[in-house]
Length: 199
Image 1 (cartoon, rainbow, N blue to C red):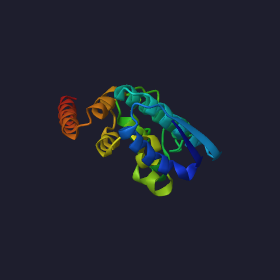
Image 2: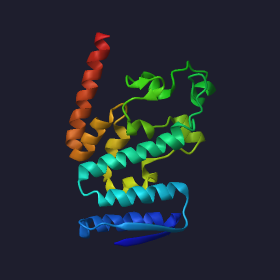
Image 3: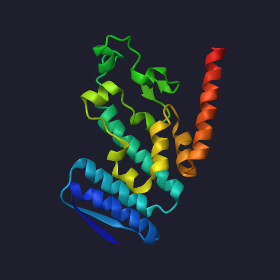
């Protein structure tokens, strides 16, 4: 089945169409043709949406979407120094004369040589109030492939699972249960408090 996308503004309509196709044509494969004035981000999204639809195993699909989104944000926000780090201090820390701690990641156990070692997607969507006020960071709602394939429960999990490895967040996304997610979240908080007391 072939679908044409003529410009960037048609991505929203494509999102709605994919949601319908997931219900009525879920066993079919699709080919999305990008024609006309399509920017680089939209082309990347279209490629992700098409391949994700053609992956019929949901766990494999979620894994693919996760990796694609992570790599996009890493390339276009992290590697371009969106938070304007200088000597370990981000733009917010320098503006407020705070002690450099490499942003929120400075307190993360998975930070190795100023890089995330566990592909935490939630952290890639987190930006401090200073950045949100003065710049235009990417949001979960900006990602068409997320809007196509992940529901509101899964978006909440992506939003709040900070400082967690990929396998933990993917487990929650695949379970698709806020009750189970809340259980694991509370358990992590309790363990964190216990570890703080010990240290």
